[in-house]
Amino acid sequence: MGLDLMYFDGQTPLSEDEKEGLLIPSISTRSELDEFEQQNIEEAILWSLKRKFSSTFLFTENFICELHKRMYGNVWDWAGEFRKTNKNIGVDKWQIATDLKILLGDVLYWNENNIFSADETVIRFKHRLVSIHCFPNGNGRHSRLLADIIIEQFFKLPHFTWGSSQLSASNNVREKYLHALKTADKGDIVPLISFARST
Image (cartoon, rainbow, N blue to C red; front, top):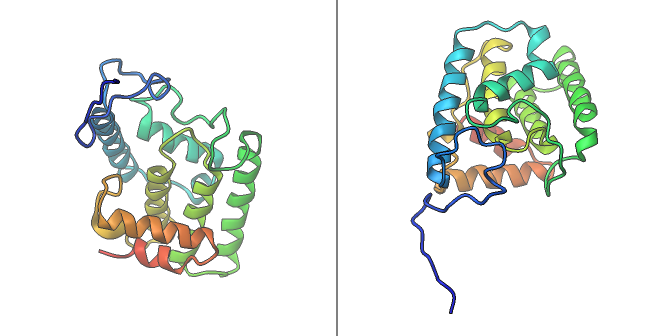
């Protein structure tokens, strides 16, 4: 008879695979990892608020990688580096840089030609960025912070509210967010735009 261990939410031990690249050896559970990542993300938010980024830098591979490194660089040694393995989500690892370059060109084209509203431009960009899945982890949170920076600094509009909840937690708001993402995956971006502005 095997030992059946029960863990409270967040107390699940990290596997050795999940610890690969972890810079803080004392982290052993999911909740500890979430806490350290959240601290790092908050530092990245403060960093972004203190700077004005030029539009020519915002829509570059360098900025996308720099922001990810700022968000996760205290926790993971691979922060800011494109993933080197394929996942069950995202493009092939060899296509990341190419697909990202196409996306960056597309978003500038949408803006220059008034194809979409500011909100739709940014949310379409955020959604496509996640579907590329540039990094081993943290793509969702990275894309939301990037969307907030772009909508504020490039379009001079208020940042998104994202349902005014911690989306990493398991709750009703997260369920609405995931539903909106799945709907966007099927080609309907409207629920995701609405969710981004919901409170």
